[in-house]
Length: 218
Image (tube, rainbow, N blue to C red):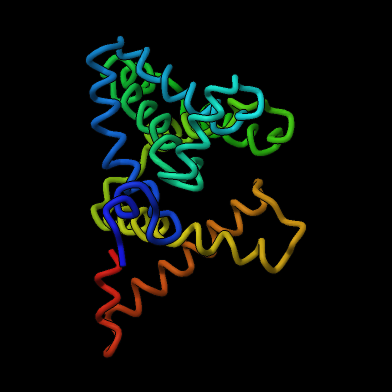
């Protein structure tokens, strides 16, 4: 049976942790936006992420605080609202009107080349590489001049919903089948292809008799 703590602070299925993180994180980032400048909102979330992934290097008092969180709130802080705060803060900054105007001036090809460079040099990029690639993916998608086609945008919207809900489950399959496979470009591409295939199956099967319930997947 779900309890209030489990509902508010933990995930109920693979990748659902970020839904919970949004419920808690959005009000927190909004509050930080009232205290800090718009560019300073990321400071506390970035610090929390450093604590999560570099706990052993932190003072004992901070380590005790994180261990209390693990024991009483969520055993996996990397899949909790503490982790989500940074990504929400990045979205908060990227939505700034001046930032959007700057993004519009970035050539789309340069943005995609930056993403490609990350995947080729992933092993040599320090900790912030993951953060930078998310930002560059956003810029690449934002500056991508897609044709004016309502059907295309509706399909992309469906993809975004299904991909999000199933990607973490499908990511585990190749990792289970090939124990040597870790998080990286190859796993990313494989997961993306499987998510696309599963999405197409769901979209097409929802019109087949007996499978109409699949329409509720998105």
